[in-house]
Amino acid sequence: MNSHVTGALEIDARGTACPMPIIMLAKAARGLAPGSTVTVLATDVAARYDVPAWARMTGNEFVGESETDGGALALTVRLRST
Amino acid sequence: MQRSRVYLDAGGSAPLSPRVSDALRAGFADGWADPARLVTESRKARGLLDGSREAIADVMGVSAEQVHFTPSIHVAFERAIAGIARARRAQSRIIVSAIERDALMNAAAFALPQGIETIAVNSQGHLDIEAFAAAVSADGVALAAIQHANQEIGTVQRLDRIASSAAAAGVPLLIDASSSIGHRDTPQQWDALIAHPADWGGPAGLGVLALKPGTRWLPAWPEGDDWAPGGISVPLALASAVALQEREQERREVSGRMGALVERIRATVRQLSGIDVLGDPYERLPHIVTFSCLYVDGESLVAELDREGFAVGSGSACASGTLEPSRVLASIGALTHGNVRVALHPGVTSDDVDRFLAVLPQVLDRVRSRLGSPSSD
View 1: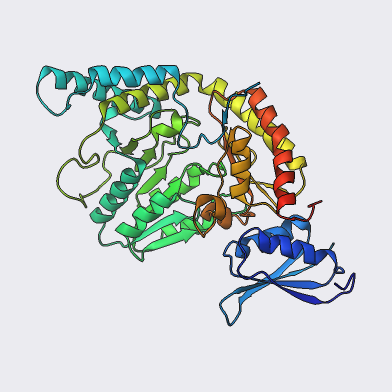
View 2: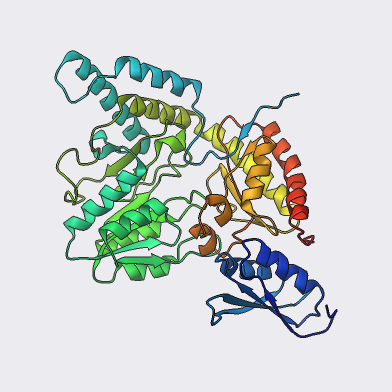
C-alpha cells in the first residue's frame, strides 16, 4: 500500500455485511495522507448510513454517494486526519 | 460465584413485580368469567375490568369512558388510524415523524396507502416542528401521528407546538405514548393516545387507546367490539392497572434513580473509543440509553453480553434479523452497526450497572479483535 501519498483509492467491500465495509475503509484510510479520497463499494445497505457516520465520528469528510452500474453503492470520503 | 443475570432490555417488556404477579393470579382466580354475560361471576369479572380501566384512566388524567383496552398496541394503532381515517375520507394523507414505530407505520400504510408524509428529525431525534406545522396545515390531511418518546433512543418530543399546529389546522392528532407512560407525565393535548402496559411493568398482551370526546371515527373492520375484537383478558387488565399504580407511586424515586444510572452509563461509555452515544441527553426517557460502537456487529455484542449475563437490545441490522438497520438510527444519522440499547427496569441496581460497565470494554475488545478491526483511537 502507498503510505502517506495523497490520492484516490477504491476499496471493494461488495458482498460483505456490516461492519466489514467500515473496517475495510478504516484500514485503507490508515495508509493514506490527509486530502486523499477513499471510495467504498458496498452492497450492504447499512453502509449507506455507516460510511457518513464513520466520517463524522473520525473527523473525516463524507463527500457523497452514487450507484455503480452493477447496483452497488459507491460511498466516498475525504480524509482529514489519519 | 454464580452471578444473577441482569436484564437491561426492559423496553416494552419488564420483569413483573411481586405485586403485579399477585394481581395476575388474583385476576385469574376472580376474573376468569366472560365479563359480557349477565351472571354473578361475569359481573365480578366486569367489575375488575371496569376498576382496572378507571385506575389507568386516573393515572393518565382522563375519564374512564375515554379509555379502551385493545389486545395489543398494534391493534390500537390499526384501529385508531383506520377509524379516524375512515371518518375523514375526503382527506387521504397522514403526517408522521421519521422515527415512529414500525407498528404505527404499517397501520398507516394499510389505512392510507400512498398517503404517508414523513417529517424528518434532527440528529437527536427531535421532530422538525416547522416542517410538521407546514405539512399538517396543507389540504388533504386526515390525521397526524407522532410519538411522545422514542423507544430506541429515549428522546422526548416537544409536543406543545406539535399539538397546537395540529389543532390550528383542525387535524386529529394521535400521540404514541407507548414508551413514555409510566416513565413521564402523560401528555394531555391529543385526540387519540396509545399506551403500552407491558412497557410500564404490566404483563404482555394488552394495549390501551384513549380517545378525546368528539374525536370522529368510523369502524373500518368487521362488526363487533370496536377496540377489542374478541374481548379483553380481565387478569391482564387488572395486573396492568396495578403495575401502573405501582409505577406511578414510585415514579419520582425510580425515575431519579434510573436517570442517574443512565447518566453514569452515558458518561462512562463516552470515554471509550469509537462510540457514538445517541439521543437527547436531557429531554429523554429516564431509563433508556443507546450507543453505537465502531467496528463491531450488533449481533456479536448482544451475544457476548448475553453470555456474560447481561441482556441488551440492538437496532443493528444483523442483530434484528433484518437486512435493513433500525429506521430510527438511520434517520438520526447514527452509526447503525454495533448498536446497543440499554433499557432499565426498577429492579436494576447500581452494582448491576457497574458490572455492566466493567464488562463492556472487554466485550468490545474481544469482538473487535475477532473481526480484525483497526483499533479505533
